[in-house]
Length: 162
Image (cartoon, rainbow, N blue to C red):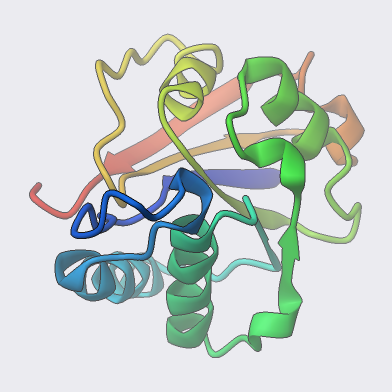
């Protein structure tokens, strides 16, 4: 049995419009929401084996704040360029290459692709993944390469304002 959690990056700053999209940092709310959401996961017994993140600054920082809450080193975060401006096919490809040894994987990425991806996974429809939202599912597979074709079971959807 494997668990996949999909997390949209925390709230980013639009303070300086000259900063390229890829380099946008988290704002104060984002820096507060990310550890709070990670703590909610810990309280529910979710401890990941691996974190996989878009290399964009706001996604990577969200992953780092989650890692800190989980007691993981930031060196354990796998950065995957494919998760920036990703569509559902990119997500499926990244998941299929997750370490076989990992039972619980958390992906950190961006809208609109992240919402499109979660809506491809189960019968649960999400209008929009808010910032720092977590969508979780499980599937009975041995290897992540089996993920796409596997029957997936919705576990929960949570976000900071819930």
